Length: 387
Image (cartoon, rainbow, N blue to C red; front, side, top):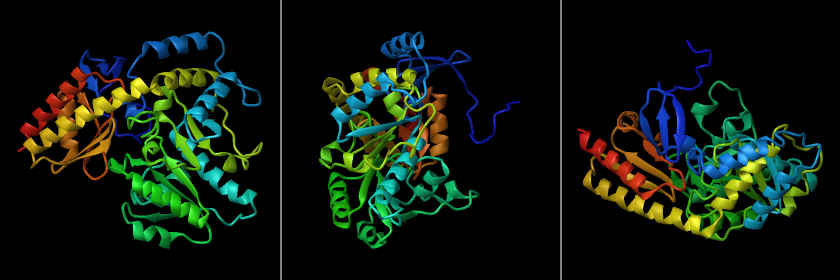
């Protein structure tokens, strides 16, 4: 009997340890992890640099209040701003906290310039921005919001319905918030031209543009941020997952204009930006932001997508579409995704579901070619067994 609440439908398997792209279960089985804690373990399991960093920092200082300066956080914020559009950073502990804070920043900005009624955020219907009360209503999913009353302030448009976006904007709209690549929503990439049009629309209507890169950021797309190729400069970007390499870190990146509104007392986090997390984050960004590392992510992605499309061609009655970008990959199926994922796991390959009957593949960013080959072999085998 477990005393854990049943808010997760947990698979009957646990792991003793992990190394690189592999997890080792309590009963001694070896699994190829193409889930990475849902895009969290960006450098795989027990990466030696992160282990060394964690050990070193743990002997010095774990936690101090944000009432004091935290040099490790100052360093990480500086690196993030130097690497991106941002001028300022607020550290959090998770993606949900980061997107929640992004919503607060947008609303507070308009309050600070004398427009307190501009509080509404326009989002994609059935997207995913977290599981706090505000973020589930931002996501616009009936399944997620059922039973939790109502939190106002959000309007929605359908993915790809460009004509409806401008019509949804009202005098009270503060921002448009979208995932650059929808993760839980089915691994759907927003094209660069569309991001550019969103930026133009926000400029035209004097709105803020929030690009949620919690899942698709920090090298996952092959670029440090998935929106980089579009040349768009957002106003606010929440990040998390990969920046900690497995350690809980979230952050909100902001330009100078909106950051001015975040004065002392407007937002806070007891654990956000603690020295232990910041030390790990510094090590992760030093590795992941390296051009050679990102070029290798692109190379691995190209190889993975090329061979997945070959499998799709081989089994056209099983696979409907290969989706995604970089190492954020979706296999949309004709067949039942639950059974498919179970068969993959029976063959020691770990994946996870996404909406629209998609199997999500999220390997470590430093995944090896032979590990991709093994994943492809297992996927091919499972496809061949589908009647």
